[in-house]
Length: 88
Image (tube, rainbow, N blue to C red; front, top):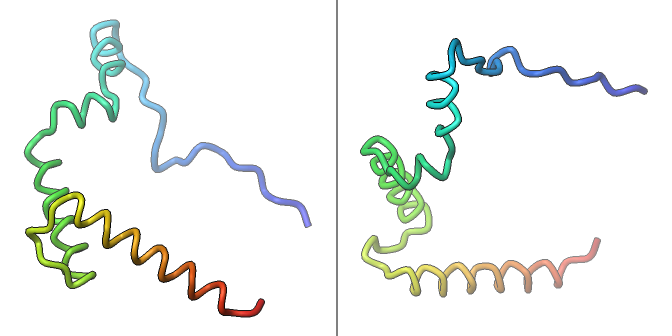
């Protein structure tokens, strides 16, 4: 069975700037620059995602970063221990 070749997605066509000014602006559109600028819509999206994750884990929202990392590490260790007990 052969795999079909992939072509660029028509849903995400390559952006071609119409002139040099647009090319300069497009070159500055990077994820790094977006996160450094942190527009309101992006901050709001992260806040909603954070709230959803806290709700899914049933964690209080006032946890510090260190407390979050401790809990995630414990979850990781618990899951790893559970996988070792299963046979393949």
